[in-house]
Length: 269
Image (tube, rainbow, N blue to C red; front, side, top):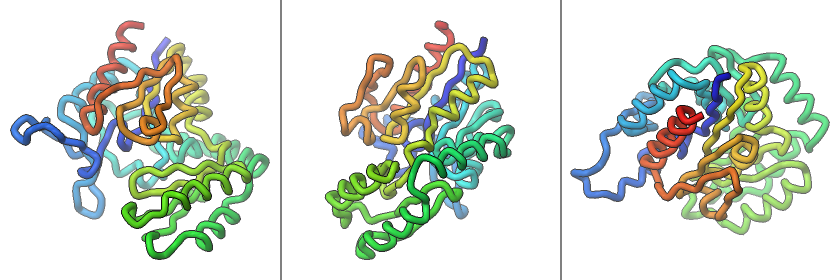
C-alpha cells in the first residue's frame, strides 16, 4: 500500500523572497531554486537540498500538493521531481488529476457548500462594504468558492480581522490572515476531505501532512501524522496535537526539514 503525502505549499514547502527567513550570515545561506515565475519575475523558492528531497519523495510516495491557491495559481508552480498525479487546489474545492479538475468531486463540493453555509455573494458584499480602502489593495474571488483581500499589513487594523472572524463564524465561514492576504473560506471547504478522497482512490494506508496556517488545521488533524513549522498562524497560536510534530525551523529551512521528516516516515513505514 502506498503512503500519501499531502503538503501545503506556500510557507510550508515553497517560499517568497519575503518569507525565506535567511537569518544566517550571507556566506552560509543555502543555495535556492526558483520554482515559480509570475509576470516574468521569480516569485517562489525552495533550497536545492529540498528540491532533491522532494524528488526522492515523489519516487517513494504519492505526493499531493495541497493548496488554497486557485488552479491557475497552482499550475504556474514548477516543482522538482515526478509530476504529481493528484493535486488539491482552492482549499479542497478542486482535485486535479493530471492537471485537470475532477468534475464529480467539484460538483459534490459545491452542493455541500450550498447546503451548509452562507453564500459567497453575501460574504463578498460584506467584505466590499466593511473593509477600509486605506489598507485594502485588491478584492478577489477564488474559483467561485471563496474570497480574499490583499492588504497592506502595516496599515491593517488587526481588530477588524477579529471582528470579521466572528461575523464569518456565525455564517459557517472561517477567516485566515496569511501574509498580505485575508481569506474568508466556507467551513465545509476543506483540504482534509479532498485528501481522504485521494487516499481512497490510491488505497493509501498511511497519510502524512504538513502546513502552517489555520486553513491547514483540518488537514493536519486528519492525517496519521502531521508537521508544522516554527512560523505561521499555527505557530503563533501554539497549535499542537498528539499526532502533530512541531518543528523549530522557520522560513525556507523549515521546508527542507519537513521534506526530511516526510521521507523518514515513508521509509520507516
